[in-house]
Image (tube, one colour):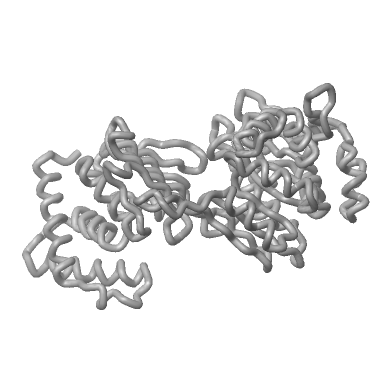
Length: 425
C-alpha cells in the first residue's frame, strides 16, 4: 500500500500533466480522430511532457498517471476504465469513496481512491451532462440522460442526495442479445420462447413486468425480433434504450422540461401522436402513468400486437398497476370499466425476476382471460421453480390457453405438446 505522501505526489503530477496537456492540445488537433486515436495521441503527448519535465516515474506509476490523465481528457475520468470493462454493466457512485459496479449480475465494491473528493464527483457529473444540454445545480439537482453510446445516466446532488453527489451509469451493450442467447444463458426455456414467438407473430398484446434491472427491456427487444419485417413499428420511450433490427421503425423519445420548466413532451403525448402515424404496432418502452389508458385503448381498438413493459411484482400485480395508472389519467372512468379494459387489452404477461446470484429469468408466463366476479382471470402457462433462491428449473404447468386457438386463426399455430406439463428444457 502506498504512503499518503506518495499518493499526494502522484496526484500533483497528474494534475500538472492534465493542465499542460490542455495547453498543448486544442480541438482542431483532435478533430476527425476516433476515440481510440485521440487516446493514443494524448498518451504520446503526455509521455513527451513527462520526459521533457524530468518526471522519472517507475513504469507502473507512469502507466497509471498517463492512463488516468488520458481518461480525464478523452473519457469520463475516474470511471472510464469501468465503462470500458466489458463485464461491467452498471456503475454506481454513491460518493467519492463509495463506488460499486454490477459485474456479470453481481454487485461489487470498487476499492477507494477513484475520486479525490466530492468536488471530483461533481466535476464528473458536470462533464457528463453539459454536452447533453443539461445542468445539475441547486436549482435543478438531478438529471436523467442518455450518453452518445446509448448508456443511461442518472445524477443527483444535494440537497436531494443526503450523502453528497450520486451518479449511476447503466451501460449500453454494443451487441444486442438474440433469442438463442437468452435460452443458452438460462433466462427462459425453449418452450417459453416458442410460445412467446407465436404470440408476437400472432399479434397478441404482450406486457413484460418485473422489478428494476430485471431484464424487461432486453426481453422486449428480443420479442421484437419476431415481428414480421413488413410492419411499421412506432417505439415510445422515456429515454431511448431499444435497438430494434426491424427495417421500418420510427423511434420517439420523451423530453423533460427545460430549465424554465417549459417544452416538456411526455410519454402520454407521444402515445397519442403515435396513433396518428399509421402504426402496425406500438411499442412503449415502459408504462408509468396516465399513458396506460391511451395504450389500453389503442390495444382495444385495432392496434393488436403491441408490446410494453411495466414495474410490477407478478402478473396479477401488473394488472392492478395498469388499472391504477389508467385511473391516474384525466379521464373520469369507473374502476370496473378500467378493469374490463385492462383484461380485454392485455393478452399475455411475462414476468421477469432477478435471482440472488444476479441472474435474470422469466419467472412466469401467464395469459389474461377476461374478468370473472370482478377480478381478472390469470392463467399461468410456464414458470420458473426456484431452489435455494438461485438454482431452479423452467416448467410448463399443463394449461392450454384459449389464446392458442386465436393465434392459430392468425397463422401462428402452436403444437399442443408445447403446453404439456413438465420441465421446459
